[in-house]
Length: 364
Image (cartoon, rainbow, N blue to C red):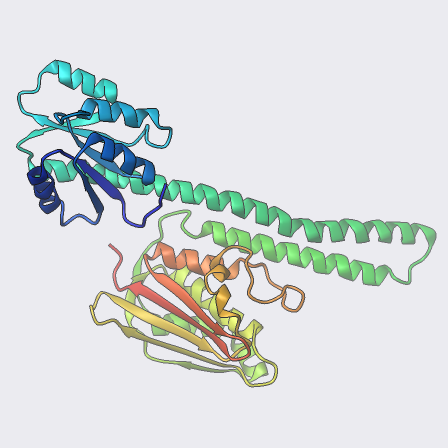
């Protein structure tokens, strides 16, 4: 099936006037409306893509609504698609019984009451949206568990191996290399701890509904930057912070977002030049959202990886040179998503990185 961004609603009616009337009636809903004039065309459409709901006329020539519904139920991919039958007000109980037997979830009677139709559709659209989110969450969880297990195995093997060598050498009186072995064990344990802390931070974002408060982003960024005072002074980092708007947000989540972005800028700085971080922002023209840009002149990254770096355990820079859990930007992306916002990245190798965040001014 073809996955599409907007939920699809399929309308099936052999009369063109009824299809056009339904198109006008549902024009204000954020849906992908598909109109067909026969049962066979409807079955073909449901094989091509997934629909949140099917509005199916009962009385049609050749293949009527009942037969169409029965055919849909034979297909594994469409057997659970909600079907609302459209029928005349004087439909007898036999047709209603046959309709439910064929797989209908509801009936609507002509002439259709617009408010009733839209309210019913909104219920199925919300169910469709929630099911999609659940499926995506399950897919992400499976991938996440696999990658987490993979990343934890390496330091565990290292600890086990070096611990065995230490035990053997200590028992035989060879103490010269024990300090180095213990240092390697300590480093591996530190990497494991960093990964576990990152995993916990990622899991906590969105685990419970966030508390939103009206916060001035300039003040929030100043508090975050204070955590890096030592690094800023010792490394001679230049950070410029423009005046930012106030928005409704979770202080905890957005503090973590900017902490991770600044931390990454410091970690991936170019040793050949002074690190400069610029943070700017503006309220967008429509007056309902704002854009914040975090720009640095660090080592940058291949822009082909701009989408992947927000996935758990995906890294734009080699692990051998720069330590890290691979969770930081995934946590950033998840926190922005919780705020109904977006984040994009743009990188140029050896030139720097730009992260652009768009957030609504209010949370409803």
